[in-house]
Image (tube, rainbow, N blue to C red; front, top):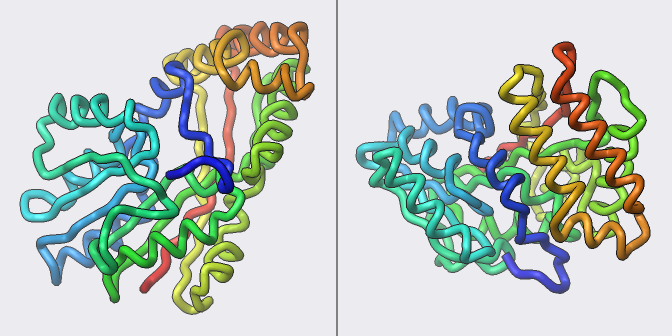
Length: 278
């Protein structure tokens, strides 16, 4: 996935990457699994492409769903993620998976290579997501499926409603929109697919909810966000652009710590999910 005109954001702080490694096919692509299983009934050799694979946890678990005869491939713009993805797959004992560098706008595969092409939390960071969908369709076989799951961050809610958490929400929204992404991407998936040239009858849309409330979930999620408030490129971009201040960032970090420590704390956001039948 190339930077530049498409305003992609390939780098993530390590704390955010740690959180991302909790993602699996079961919690991040559950809507796709029934279609995958039905396709397996007529094709035991399914091939899957995971675009923007990151650390590869979703890719590896998708590979398990198509084993032993199928295969999954993960691509990511950031070459530094590839060794980690390979290591995670190896530790999980997954052999029918591979990883390589790749650009969502210029995928390194010929037309009609994969039965299923999937992405999670990629389109919301692009200023031309329909072009990405068009490229994903290109590498998908006729009769295959393109699927995407993307957050709709305007729906984010949290308890307790601390002022610092509200500031975090507003800061992320401003930063994301300024970078060319979409704060309301989950609800725009059908629109983006239509802009990619897909007919409405090819599209199935659903919504799901991500929620965080257990002590371990709060710790992993909250500490990752505290790190982003106190260090890293996201913080520096926010300060440079004027979307936040040092004092506000510290207030946000302290609010996330209070949120971690509260037994009644929770957070949730809706996700749009789309499948396109090619």
